[in-house]
Image (cartoon, rainbow, N blue to C red; front, side, top):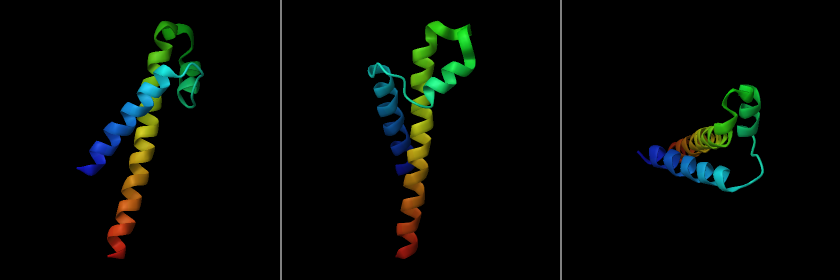
Length: 74
């Protein structure tokens, strides 16, 4: 259950950060370049959502691995 809250918190942080920071953040800018001009008016929103998903899942996986290591040591 802690993992879900970690995922939601980091997704939200990176979503908001991607929307507020004027410079493009990897990998969202790469994702927007791949979809091209078809969704150019929603590119910044798609980039922010993709950044939130990418970094949220990455940090959630780090949390899971570290918590399992601490549980194994006990």
